[in-house]
Length: 580
Image (cartoon, rainbow, N blue to C red):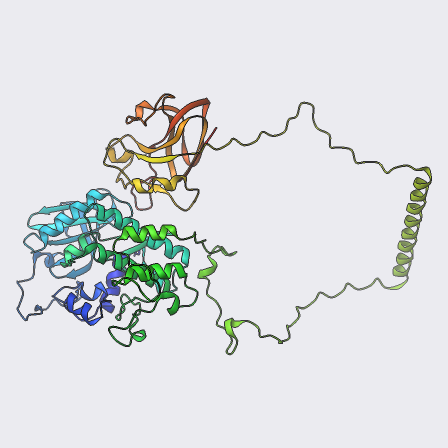
């Protein structure tokens, strides 16, 4: 069966869940450093699956709840809206259930949350799901549909079969500094964008963060997970910021920074003598941890401002954490090894007892490598004759060379100079590469919608091949039928001659090279006001105008996006260079 982050996370959560408890009491018992997972089960207790008995439950107050909701009667093979066929129950908790299902119309796997329409949290879940679907940020697992029908509320979301939850990665080794930085930067930027739309998560943990590729992470359950479980917060932005700090701490150390562990990851109870004991910084807990990332993790985790690790104030929003991550010096990725794996992730051999790092101690004799045996000499008279012949030839050659040198010195001749290499008639030196035009600013251009990812637009010209600007997620080709194109406008500051455009993307993308009129002092708001100079399809395009044109504004216009491994369509631009 294909791997999926949600399925693995639920299994791990069942095996590590702490006893049911009130969230506020749990935080107080943990001295403020409490795992959201310990309280995520709400007041009803542990989860059950189809294979587990569903006996009567009681609330913390001892009152018997209402009869089992209709969602408990669902089974594998049941169809919702005559389209979504339920395949496997992943979670049964507090009146709702989560399933792996198949969208029979589009023939793809999806995830489904189901709860009765008369459930006390049904309206909240439906509202959260619809608001999340409108966000359309590809850094989040997308909500595809949210429907109330025939007494049931169900939420359909993406199912990523190749995604790996963070806790699974950390069971093997901590993340290297480069990938840990990518994790924190992407999640903090995503949550900052969500908060601007008044959307919060409140359940960020090693199971809701999925790794979809090298240095690429996505978050599932935005707003919906908290709504399903009834999780609330008086300071939601601060709660999400603390959770991102906990994720960064865990990525650097393999330890969840609260007394109790989650999802098979150990907590730090053995490092805390009491509830008020200060949290140990990552670079003090584990050798080799990046000091800058360690400090930022602590500033995101600690609520009372200055800590022993830093005199700087604590972060209160993901936006503040994102900006601080952006000011760190660039962290290089691990060097590749001959087998194609990162050196950091190679398993090091166990060191010998008594020798730090497994290195050979000083003074120990090194065993020489076996040398090749010398070839045997030629035997008998034949060998002797051959030796004499070679010796005679060497003597003759030396004598001849000495005589020619003496003769040249006596005549005063200079040694001949080497003739210059012949060149074909009319051959010219190769032309110098065209000079790059300096780009003043870059802005997103989406005349048919509310926008894509405007804050990330500068990444397309930052010279870093690992950063990129990306579009929203579309569930079909041609932007799902919503628009004819979108792109980036490059402002050169003043009219300049431009001749060519180099664009690098992730995936085969349809790109047009367009330019505004020479007298345009502001960027046009209509894509047809730009003149198309060239177009192409690929992931590394060199588009050329027929002749240089004068313009201040260049439009990189995307007319078709590549399809991702999840079956959806998105565009990503890693580099743009304009040449004279």
